[in-house]
Each structure stands twice: as C-alpha cells, then as structure tokens.
Amino acid sequence: MIELKQMILMLCLILSGAFCYANSTVGKGNEKDGRPVSIELKESTGASSLDKSNAISPIINGHVLTVVFSESLRQVTVEVATISGASVQCFSVFTPNGLPVYIPNTGNHIVTFTLSNGDVYAGEFTV
Image (cartoon, rainbow, N blue to C red; front, side, top):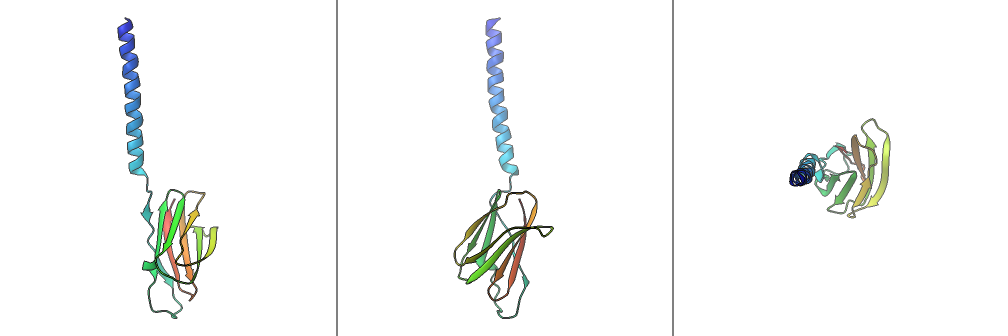
C-alpha cells in the first residue's frame, strides 16, 4: 500500500513538471516578441525626394518599442499614440541615436516619426 502511494505521488510530481514545461513552451510560441514594425511615408513636404523609411527600424518586444536610426536624420520627433489618437509618449531625439519606448497599455498603437524636413513616417503595431 505504501509503495502504491509513493508511485502515485511520484507520478503526480512528474506530470506536474511536464505540464508546466508544455505550458511554457506553448506560451513562448504564441508571443509576438521581437517583431519589426513596418513603417511607411504618410506625408512629404516635397523638400526631400529620398525615402528615409529604411533608415528607421522600430521593433516591438513585449511592452518596449525600440527604435534604431541607421543614419543621421538630424532631429526626429517620435510620438507613440493609441489607435484612437490618445498620446502615450512623445520624444525629440537627435539621430543616429536610438531609443526605447515603454508602452504601459496593451492594444493597437501608432508610432509617428516627423523628420526635421517635414516628412512624416508612421507604422501601426499591437502590444
């Protein structure tokens, strides 16, 4: 009787570990961390004929949006807002520096980059 009790307890211990591992593995596959945010030119003043969207690399990882500028675009205003238009964060940064932006709430958001020449680039993402 004692051996049966020990076997059942041991089986419960092993199965609980297996279920925890399976839940963790499945959970990792469902997360959308580390995915790039596609951006496009929304408005151009005509002052610049060059598309600079390839110089802006935003990546969402959980609640953190990391923006990397691969070339100097001078001063850039970065605004993160909800899809309904409520501002979450707004920064002005000199490039080619990058910046991390913490987004506290989940949902659909828009990131807008306004270059010093007036060109506006934007991209939508979900936290």
